[in-house]
Length: 438
Image (cartoon, rainbow, N blue to C red; front, side, top):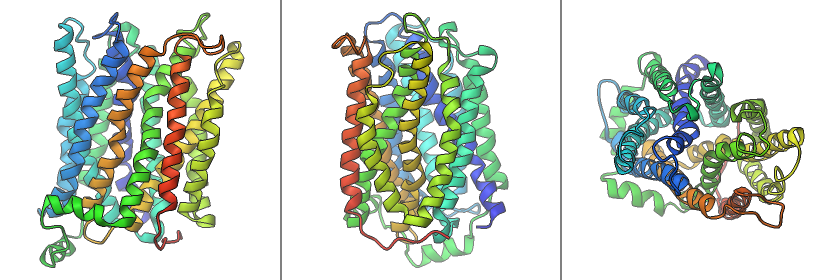
């Protein structure tokens, strides 16, 4: 895949990242302030919507890759599934409507159904989008190409941040996120369709030859059991599960934590979560380029292991940050805290899929992608199911240092550190001949 093809494929990440961030970064707070406003378990109910939606999305990965590897159409085996972005964009748009006029149970069921439609169609689309990337990427360009993808994903994340900042529309206090979701759904759809119509084409002749030679699993059951019989893949999948748990938990708690320490603080700190996040995005961009350089110097696994060790040490220490301090001190501590958390997340995003490509057998790219993505996204509903009750239950002062929800967030950070330890242990057990980066 040449540079032009890579760019025409990677541009879709703007839409996929934006759609994903709109759902995970914005809507939990929106549900909490509207459909479940005033309820004693508002955190739990809001996070439960995410648990149901992402649980269904995780299950989708189990069959998405198998179906893709068995598909043979005039457009290829990956590209037709990009059209799943159409119903996904519609569902995402409808999630931004204020359904507080409905009974609580009605709002919960409707929002859960819309969330499931979005995550299921998104997972069908994204499995094939990433498998297309795997099909076309040379072994020696995997980290570099992955970082290019993440760069475009960072643009999508930036847009997801910019939309609420611009004109102030979308504040959950104003009871409407419809502007955010309709614009986000439109951008999501447009960029995925750009890949469908103008992205690189698949080699149809090579696909036919693979089908004729039987280079694909004969059944969906064998596609799952076959991957798990691969010792290297099994070790890596377990490591990826716990690394993804850290990423998932950070994704869910950063926004409510920042809001707790700024807007809900007494006295309040006049700075938006989106502005704080925007201030650390350049650091994330530098982190992606650092990963590209470091992989050439030390190799993917070595850098990945060292980043996990950094998180194991730094995460527990970070629990002491943003507990006390004046306005300026609090802002500085929050930026430093987010930088620590996001550095580990950036490394996970940079290497997780690149290592997957190193250990995936030829002809089963989507199958292995689907199974690993299932394992990697399974922590998302688990994280949301854990975070909500912890924040509802541990809402009291501890030692006069951690006030209100502070201690709940401390417990979550410690759980994240334990997950990094387990991920590190299984990553060290991974043995394979690494493809060096060009």
